[in-house]
Amino acid sequence: MPAYSPANLVATIAVLLCWLGFGLVIVRSRMASGGKSAAKRDLSSIFGIALQGLGVALAWAGPLRFSRPVAQADWISAIFPALIAFGSVILFALSTRAMGANWSLVARTREDHSLVQTGPFALMRNPIYVALFGMICALAIALGHAVNLVLAIPLYVIGTLMRVSIEERLLRETFGQAYDDYARRVKRFIPLVW
Image (cartoon, rainbow, N blue to C red):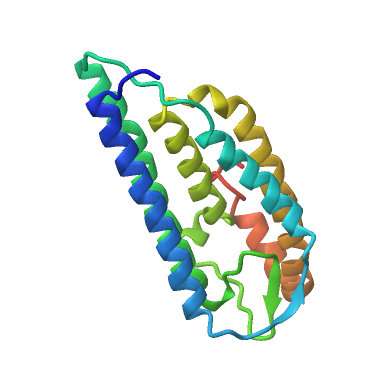
């Protein structure tokens, strides 16, 4: 196994700390949800979660590919994944805060569910999935596994699209025209594009 480059080690540590931050946001969000039960739940989204998980696992998979000596370009390339990861954690934290008790791992709506259109949801309908995508990319780049993204990204995207279709169906059933108006106004993943 090649030796660690100090620059990439810094990037790896930064990205791993951001994954820890991701986990802490999840725990905080679950604790804040109030434990109210779902009015409608669709467990078929678990298959989409599994595909997304495979995408994350592929980003981790493989030996560490770092080199010496460290050039200035190595430091610049180390900053890139750390910035992506940090931005992704911020987006995730803002998104779960905006969703409040509505946020859940499995697709569901609650009796007191509201259609969140503020914060990151004013710019894109699925900022949490965008944040996780950023974390996957940052992790693979920091660990020297960018080539794994060739398989990780399609798996993640397929799983995400499966989950989004289920969630959109539940939201349309719950909010009807209000959700359709929101969906026409705000793109799924990339503001003004897609």
